[in-house]
Image 1 (tube, one colour):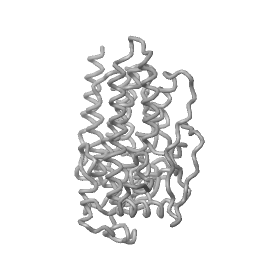
Image 2: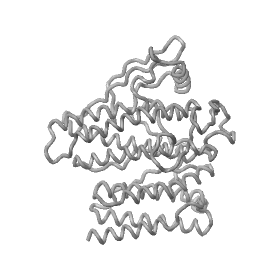
Image 3: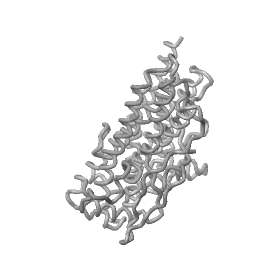
Image 4: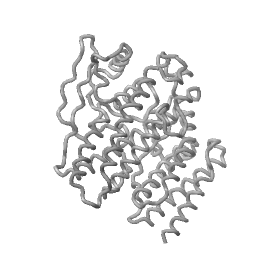
Length: 394
């Protein structure tokens, strides 16, 4: 868990609007910069993972009328799907650096509500609302962006006033960039005394700086524009968030907060097609993480398969679940994502997981309950690809 150095007091202006102090430093646990860097990288992987699924959950719940806000399956800072995919790329970079430094990859994240000390409020899987958007904008903001100053424009002040009104006066001045700023410092320390077996760490300093800059620039501006109702999806209706949340023109479907597919084994629950689609979505989510773990840990060519599971079945199920008022659960897998003690065992566990998903999907297909765009043959294809890799591995 990340800890913070003592924070400065948050000041309040005469008009009652809270002004943020500069972000505080991340407290250091280890004197050894290598150990400290690994600790921070694992924390960053968990944070990027959490942000990725939050943004995906919110994207799936966007109503079709606002497709420009939901977006497609390419990395972009102009829509929610694109930002989620960029977070996945950050997650990928952090894990690849962990492996290059000789550590194991990190596929885990905390369950929701997610309350690491670096954040000023708990995070949830939830629909888009002014409250959730305010948290995302705050988290992605660069240092100083939320403080009134000589360069503050009337539009900036309007944003700060609305943000302060939604978040309230008791938020702490911490942002995601402070995590990356500290990681870069520790990486530079390691690079200064790096043994020859380490990769070119100067290249990784540049990559971490690019991740930090992307969040503090385009992601922050994206969430600010959506929060203010200025995104192009709203067709100049800057009052979009003043609609009642049950209005059919409200930008997001009424999905539950922090849903799960693990809560019941009663016959009625097992026979509910929505519950089984939620379970199928978990199986695909876990498959994606296991495929990525194989790519990082064993250098297997499985990243592309993971991407296909995310952009095809996971996307189809996520949109379908949200339209039916459920929401994708993104439950953590209790047994972890490295299923075996060695590569062959991990591949076998993954193969059985994919076969399990195929059985659920085939039953839903027979009942005509699958989304029309669900690729029914993807699980068979994935098991065949895994079998071929096992043969190649010898």
